[in-house]
Amino acid sequence: MSLFSRKKVAKVLDVTPARVSQMATTGDIIQAVEDEDGTDKGWPETYVEEISARRTGRRTSRSIYGYGTQASTPKREVDYVAERNGKQAFVQVFRTESGLIGLITILKDVVKEEPPYKHTVKWNPWLHLNSDDLVYYMSTAEHDHGISIYDIAWVQTNNEGATEIVVTTEKLPAQALPDHMRFAQEKPSVTVSRQKISWPTLHSKLGMKVPMLDVPTYDAVDAWYRAQKTTATLELDVDGNYNRAESATLLKGLKDREECSSALGHAADRLFEGTNWSASGSQAGNGFLPKDQEHLEFISITKTPGFSHLRPAEDLSDEEKVLSVQERQKMATALAGFLYKEYGPYGSTPTSSLAIALDYGINVLLHPSSKELDLEPDDSSAKYPVLYALRDFRLHDRRPHAEYFQQLSKAVSVSTPQEYELLSTLNKSELDEFNRAGQLNRLLKDVDGNFVLAQVKPDYNDAEYTKLTVSVPVAAYLEPSEKLEQLKNFDEIVVEPDTQEGPVFLKLGEKLHIMPFGSRAWSEGFTHGYGGTGPSNLISALVDFLEWAAGERITKAGRERVQYAVVGADQGGVLRITRNQVMRPGSFGTEAS
Image (cartoon, rainbow, N blue to C red; front, side, top):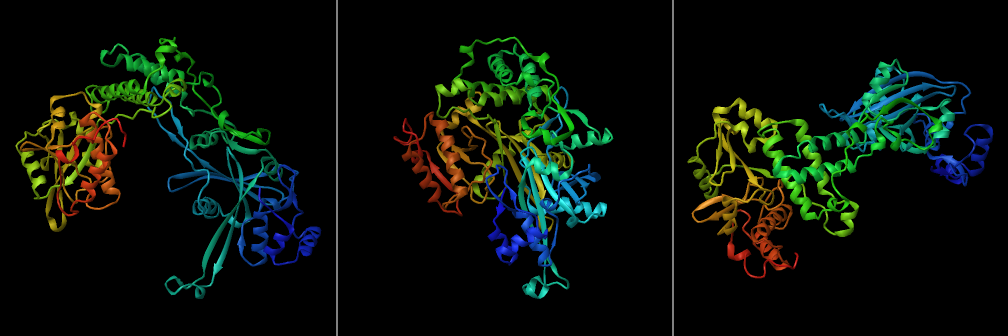
């Protein structure tokens, strides 16, 4: 709580300190108040801002510190939900003996899940809003309900506490503005001041316990309205415990799958261990509610769905539960492949509930347990295994592009594109265009079996161009194959200029191949010929590939060779890096870059 001293108040109001004391005695301003721990006295900053604005003719909302302690219960004047820029706020306005008080609560998003999962809450960081958002939520009271924003003392509430908000509007004469900003009428300038306020103080100023949503969501507001504005009860998997336990149960049911039985068992066990079983059927918001609950009245009670029936018997011993980062990475990769080939949207048996469960399983394997962290404190997190990355480029007549496309033109179009990996990562607009204009598009396979979508798209002046979208494999997460392994013996790395989103090519013999990524699905732009973000992305992607090809970490000298080749290239020309430039002795080994 920020309190102004008598001297500071005097400076703001342009009076003497003695005059401040006199104003407090005569009731022109409130008496100095104590801070929360009783160690200091003064005037709240927001209250001083209101008094200053009124003395200088500016329009201002009320400060709640100017209200007395209420002796009677306030009347609920109006309540509504306002939305701006995808953020919603629940606003409640009450009429007290001293004036109107408006409570603003930012609502969190509810993530709608399909059965067997339960809806859950996305904990967006919308606690501190910008001034424009706050003023919009306040002004809805005036626009829709005829209550001026300046007649209300505004307070924002959330589980972390309450904050008073004072809005001041100062009209600047048009002649005081630069020529390009002058208007026929005056231009308002809005200032928003904030000040923490304790729950006991808000309770006394409001004249009743502060009405709060235990978990602030639109679903809670809707339930309260449907309950005729009486306390409402609803179910949400706020902490994710129900969905975690449900996912573990589904994974346990797949354990007989030989290709990833161990990974499924470990993932299910870790999900079960990370579930707070005591939360089953309890009030979901308990872990997020303020401490001073004696000053609050919850108008919604959000309960976690019961899930104690999902609790399993233990399958693994304590020793078996401890995994190295390499073991966890291998298991996560096995589950990612299983998801991709079988239960994902383009797998052989698309099943959304099992796809979600496998994603839970992959994520829980990435992070070490406390015991594992003790054994491997450094570099102990695994990477989420993304198997393919999409890169696309506009076809040009330049040699690498034309050469690659010429190889593609000899390929046979795939007749049933919905069954193949490329489409699993294309966004909806690309899929829609493919379906609408199928006669203009072809799904092909290149010499390595990578899927390539060739689309004919409109250009300027009724012209057309061909866009190629390539499904680039991430080698570390795919099963070894002869086609992938042969790329380790590349002769040359080839990068086109001005194709930031395009792939990197490898020359092997007389043919061009798409360079696989090593252990990361790169989506960033690649450029060369200068020092900057694009070249830095390309250097990192090349190092990632080269480490996979060499089977060792690159040394500092090895990285510098890649860096010199990329940064020192002709920005407008094709970048060509020979094998001898980057695979020479001393480029790889135990010395980490």
